[in-house]
Length: 405
Image (cartoon, rainbow, N blue to C red; front, side, top):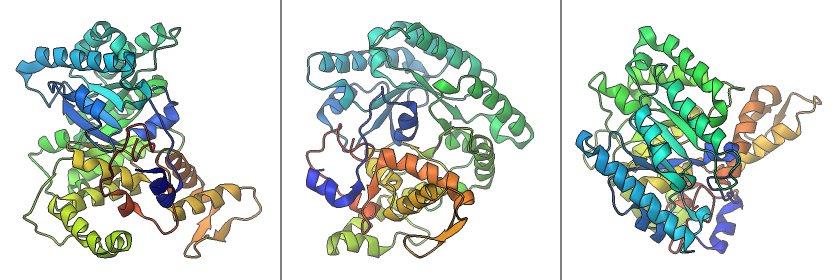
């Protein structure tokens, strides 16, 4: 995206970030997290060449994305890819700041311990580790290792903090009779190590498997009753104001689907407003690739206070990132609420004159909008997310914060 395009679309552009940025930025910046099997031998080359436009976060998977018999091979491949990236940085082929946020999803406490001791200097390229099947049984062991590593590296100026991203996806959490007790135990652990907790992630695929369920591309995860109820409880505990946890949403696993049951819900007008007749074709491409379902689910995520989503296909990157950009109307409301929080009044008409803003009830919402705007930027008044969807050529991974890093 060119400088002129940035100015035309953004009222306030996104910030740049990297794995040494403050936690308050990184927690929101994880965004659309692209999973890749750790057995992939092209990861470093693809990152260097900017193959996936807009890529901000990569999660190299040593767990479900590889077979049980591939663990040794995957660990070797991971080490090789990180060493290759390190060589690109050392030789000036690319800067460390231009890398996407890199995470490794481990499969056990023992594997995490092995990687922390075996990856050496390559660990400085990582932002953290994804911790699957996180529970009260293994959680403290995971974070004890991360805390010990971070404290041991505290005097090394070249070592960024390594964060943990627990995935809530175990049977004790989804089963109603054990859920609340287990969630409270998990929160006690996370509160103890909160400085190292970057996201709390929801593993809806594993939850669904315990009931033999799989959502179709025509509906969102919020329409699967048992999953919806569990997500509600996770938000109830970790999404409260003052808890300071950023919750990340479940994976969207479809990238093509042509047999539909329901009508698509993407309106034509935003696409035509942005791109004229060409916008209709873009809309149909999104519908054919099941992107309308993804966009709807991201909207539902946001409405429930969830920011960030696991994705499994590069075509998901831009739609998810674009949905997190703050609209001009949201930004103006949030700013006005915060600026008028001086006790002189309680309610006032919004800048767009289409709603009432109540200062006390809406203040916490306003703070979260401002936090998101710093990472993802603010659109101009007449712009909306559709403007960010078409492919832009010559996009560097270091530009445009969380939309076109």
